[in-house]
Length: 348
Image (cartoon, rainbow, N blue to C red):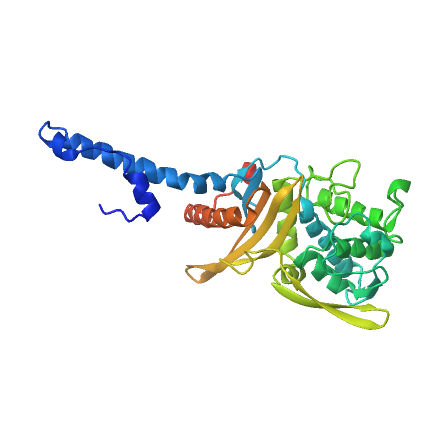
C-alpha cells in the first residue's frame, strides 16, 4: 500500500533508525517490517487526533432532526450554560409573534432610547440616542450582525406595545423591557424550555445580578420553533443587508454583515452566533438538503431533510460546526436508512 504524506509527516514516519540490511540475515526482516508499518499507522493516527478531539471540544452540543425533534447525537444536552447572543433568537421570536398575532407593523418607525446604550458593549453600527429606524431594520441588525443596541430597542418598543395586553407584572418587571423579557420566558415555558432563564433581550451576562442560562436541548427546541417561521428563516439567511436610519432628518445607511461564517456552505441557511467571556463561543446552525421523495404505489411521500445543530462553550465554533454538520448528515442517513424510528427518550 502506497501512503501519500507531506514532508513534515515524512519526518515523523522516519523516526526508527534501523539498518534493515543487517537484520535480514538474522531473520528479523519480516518482523521489522511489521513494526515499521505499525509505527506508521500510529503516527498517522496521532496526526488525526486533534481533529477528533475538536469534534467533541464544545462543553455541550446537540444534533437534531428539525422535523421530528429526534436527537441524532448530543453531549451534556441538559447542562445549564450561558449562551450569549443566542438569546436574540428568543427576542426575535417574541417580536415576530407579536407582529403576526397582534397585527404589529414591522415597518413602523421607532426611536432608539438612551437606555439602549447602557452596558450593551460595542456600537459597531454607530447608533445614537434619538435615531429613528424601522422595527424591521432593527430585526436585521439584531439577527444578522448581532447588534445589542438593536435588540434592546426592539424590546423597548414592543414592550411598550405589550403593556396594555400582558397582565400586570410584578413591579420589578414593570418596565417595557421587563415586560418583553417576561414574554421571552413565557415563550420558553410554552416550548418546554424548562432549564432556561432570560434576563435581557441581548444575552449580555455581565450586567445582571444573577446569570441568564439555557441548555443545548432547550435551544434546539427554540430553534425548531423559529425555523418553522418563514420570516425568521429569511432574516437569518441574509449574508449582507443594507439598513438605514434617520438622524435629525438625515438618512444614514449601513451595510450589515452576517456573523455566521458557515452561512451558505453545505446547505447552512442560518441561524445565529453568540459569544461572551462566560459563554465562550456559541453557535446555532440550520442546514437543509433536498427533500427525499419516496413512492409507494400510487402514493408519494416528500420528506424534508433539515438539521438543527446547537454548540455551546466552544473554542472554535465554526470549525467544530462544520465537523458536527458532516457528522450530523452521516447520522441522519443512517437513521433514515433504518426507517426513521423515533425513540421518545431521544426526542425533544
